[in-house]
Image (cartoon, each protein chain N blue to C red):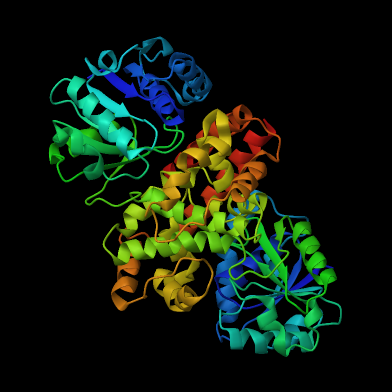
Length: 306
Length: 306
């Protein structure tokens, strides 16, 4: 398979186009906007220096993009379809049905939706079994994560084929076993985002303070270790177990507008076991974190100095 | 001022000790634990390679640490006091009063508390005007952010002196204008953390999936741009305005357990103006983000390869 169809010429659609082109694939793209070609060209042009710097795949070229005048011409010969239309459930339902009708049989169709469940979106399609969520992060050409999830009527084979396809293009895939509004990463970042909006709405913090609080604070840790391993290290030698026993009571504090779950023994153990599952000793994780924090801050200093 | 007193020998207390030593200060530390000296020595030893790699200040030495047998001996000659005791309000109240009684007059005393308001903690001190919150992030020797906040009875001069002191040691300071449980950064990360705990408690995601979702996804962006500027760029050429107009409806979606605020015209404008305040065009921010994302991922690859 060397041809991908991309439907939608927004930031995410354009980011996918850039990613697939950089990985040496041919891309046929369509968007109903009259300036779709201009927009896609601009998005790809803007991404290309970064992609070149990262290293293009053999045969990768911006010239491998064709913007088609109709949807059918974009998807009719595709080996994989990526839909990145605006977040509107009715629109997604109709569009996915249209794509399904025009795409060669057996080809997987993925939606970039930020949070709709595929069960909600696949209702009008004739072949719902090949419809999956393939949710990327902005910019799709630089952030590795793609969350893949099927709906009630999606075939397991389609979920697996999508995961394999994305991995083949260099992506890091999380396959969700169940449908969950917002999937995993968006649920996590949305909780933080909503707290931020509340804080601005209530005059508790400015946009600048919120951004600085993250970029100069916990945000520096999150490319290294996620929230769980980060707190595993906050517990010192005792790890997550000590951290939960020490900071558990703060879950009752009004530190955010989101109520915490009851810290049952089962939840405590699940967190502790999850953090210890890698078998990596605390001291090793601390060394990794420290080296990474230095490397990240140096890298950012260099970028900011230009 | 060249001598700092550190009270508490846990991960945060020890991290502060390492930070101050690396910046060339003398540190006198105390903790009631019988193995306080051993613990502090281990914490400093573990941090020292990273601090050496970063570059030590003139005169910086691990030998500049003295662990004292009593609290009074630790704080009695200090030019600044950093308290990092366990999160227990009664304990903090009594301890801050004790520290206050033994510290030279006019010297600022800061608490590393993760979320108590200083107004709650300064109730038993004779000189509450010099008590401030100085909240760091783990590890305090590598994460720049310190949140400084006073209580009702704190003098403005003490807040300013603490901010200046921390900045002098290389920290990035956010001074809060009002008391807010969890301050700013902890409110934001706590919202994400609580959503993560709910997800594990409900079998919606594993610890590993949560961490991967962040480290391979949005977490990569947060050292570069905070949540606001990140979403400013998700809006394409239209920035935060387009983003809110497009994704605003998703604030009603059950993407997290935290209800969003009403997206009033005032809140929308505050977010848009906050993101545009820097005057930096979208294209420039996109270039910065892309270069930073590449640099961060390369830096992490190198660290992980050892």
